Image 1 (cartoon, rainbow, N blue to C red):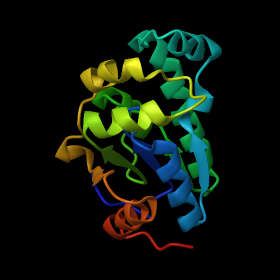
Image 2 (image 1 turned 90 degrees about the vertical axis):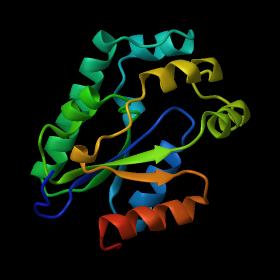
Image 3 (image 1 turned 30 degrees about the vertical axis):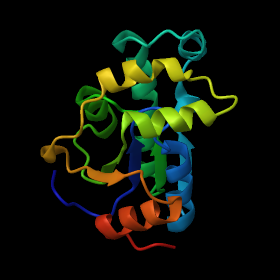
Length: 174
């Protein structure tokens, strides 16, 4: 992926429990950008399915991913910037979100299943039950070099992870 003009969107991706929302909020605050949780773009049918412990199918995901991509296009078209927290587990999903833009970058939050399972077990009130973690890891396709993603370890503090991302993407913080 080529280096075009300034970035208008970051997509913070990873399995449930990797810290997408927390890191996206920290990055957005640090950069002075908007923060958008990809979960809010899910139709109610998807939330109900996940709450019932049922993994989503690709058919369930396409409208959700398209809604996020449309919001990225809308914001970037208005010269606005945002950090999106979105699982984006497969390359095909990321392709829908980025669709060839060079002003949108992927940030992959990488962690072991054991570390993430511990975090999920400690969570309260989230619709993703810990039992779906196996299906998340089965679905996960780590970003390929051609995607230009930044891969960061989640085995650090939120501030250290945000610092690492900003440094590696060479973004001027607010």
